[in-house]
Length: 105
Image (cartoon, rainbow, N blue to C red; front, side, top):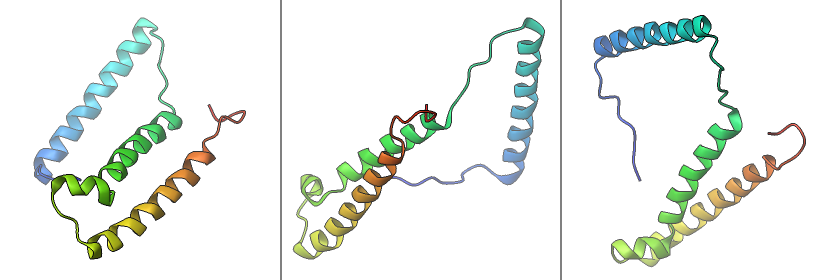
């Protein structure tokens, strides 16, 4: 499990993001000047990456897998098991929404 932390000061973040925008604009200018092909990032790729991350975490936090880190009490299993099952069900429902139907790729 992990969490993200905002460990860049607001002033530094503003400067960095401004410089990133400048750099991306310069890259876009080069692309236009040199007539380079543009690659496309589609939403399906983003969703699949998120699915992979979710799947890995869910697989690692099942009560059986947690036993590898130490004893998991019956109470902890009762707390974790149903929540993971619910999330896995939601995962399956979302995954089925992606099906390879015309226009989804």
